[in-house]
Image 1 (spheres, rainbow, N blue to C red):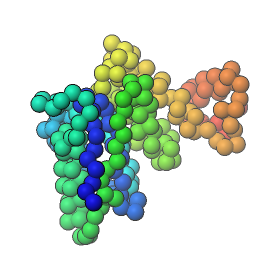
Image 2 (image 1 turned 45 degrees about the horizontal axis):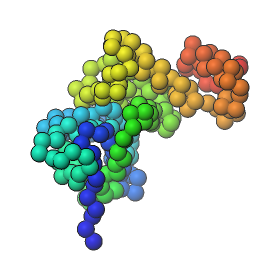
Image 3 (image 1 turned 180 degrees about the vertical axis):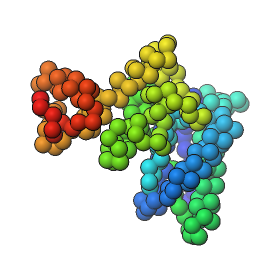
Image 4 (image 1 turned 45 degrees about the vertical axis):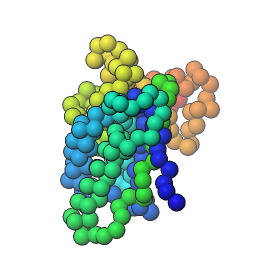
Length: 232
């Protein structure tokens, strides 16, 4: 049975997820991650695809991308063989071949084709940024998203140079001045990170709104603290 073609929309961002087969590791050393990012940067540039956010975990990865090339393609939804599909095929195949050679393994590395979700509403876009860049925090790999080197958080929230990241128009609308835009983006991050850090012994979500605000304010002063040890 032939595989169903992906239905994409020109100019709309797409959330892409690629996992290791049987959820096994796909990144083994930092050199592997650098190779993947280099390949992603080159392929996305050649295909006119903008990468807005990303995170490389041990056994999977997330990307937020928008295909910009629309010449000769009717407006609206279309069956796409270029843009994002082309980037993912080129990067995934090249990376899998390198890993198999480097570690003397055989067989597939990924669990088939990547999964993707079209983001049609602007109000969901920054939430997708947030979901992607908070993955290391939810996985308890780091306390703060800025501590994880293999994501776009440092570029989007701290202004660090990252040749892969190209901001979406919705992100740019946060503020005209870069410092204010970064601050607005971090504020958008802090509250979810605060909620992600909550101890099950201290269900702040169930507190009255004013108590939540006080707890959040204290946590922002001491972001290394957890609500398990914080007096509310």
